[in-house]
Length: 516
Image: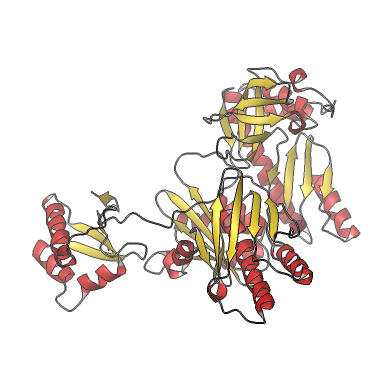
């Protein structure tokens, strides 16, 4: 049976949160800040070489982040000299298109070369982030720029066109290669992705033009000022996830914001027009994440202790060097079938571990301590199951067999810090003291605040409360809310928040700004 995949996008004033659900179960979660710029994979910067490290054959580059970024000689790419010449020659008065197409690609950088012969401190270079700043380390960079689309990856200053190995038909490979070569301008190369198989020429042409426009539009910024700056960013995280995930098994994309809805719709109409109809604007009352039960799953999935089936649970600990996952069987009866039971629990745990790695985007080294099993047959079966479960993971990974101590080592590509969500909260009512005012007088406390805001000229207010307090305040025909509206001649809307504690409440004004 084909699994049902839904993408839920929640937009608020500061963040865009994206949840990928498979059969209504959360399997990936991403949060993108809509304020300011963070340093993200795929972003292309004009950076300044700060320091050469001959012993590492690498250099530190300033891209505007507090932590200096790092580039190795082998990441400068074959045609670094062409990029370097282009940076030096662009200016606002010249024909930059002409300059770009006339730059000679050769000679290529030697494989065994030295970085000090290519870079000098103070030199401005075009770089792209391949690994975000993690912990104390700065971003990892490459000077081989690529612009990824759904069907094609555009390579500025390159000449080859390569086709994905996953496309098996030789005729299709030849068709795609000939087609892309015929529409690529001079000094551009491309990689044709698996998704391009069977796509019409018009779709590939439109996508290629949009990628070239994106690259060429960055030249204005480059020509105007040769200082450290962002030249262009990858698409928003929403469209990046769509680009990598979108396939025929996608069922629905629900968005609660009209602007983002239009952005996604336009993007899909460009890369996969037949799927435009799966984008839907959410119009129900209440938060979209509550409607699709995403909030509840986030709260239950990101804690230190994660429950699995039959009373078993995982304990997940993270250190600077690695992640450690301990599998615990919980309270279960001991009988002759203990070996089989242990194997079953380990299999359930493996399913949850594969999900957790994607959900938290855990990278680097992961050590899993499974419950000890005697049978080698079971050990091999568990190893094979783990490999199968990890097949859908887009990050590069490697799973090693169980050691004699029952430990499994998994390495997973780490390009950004693991997602951490604190699922424990300091009580906003007692502020961690453990003592709260009597719940009998909570209505008086809320009324006092309401009276104050009305006296300050606020006549349209929103009161956010937890579900229990909401039910208490709205109970009966002559509820507290009804009395307060009449008494203070104001408009008062009550919104129940599933993630609020029992007596927590917040007031918001007409512009939806929180009131202190």
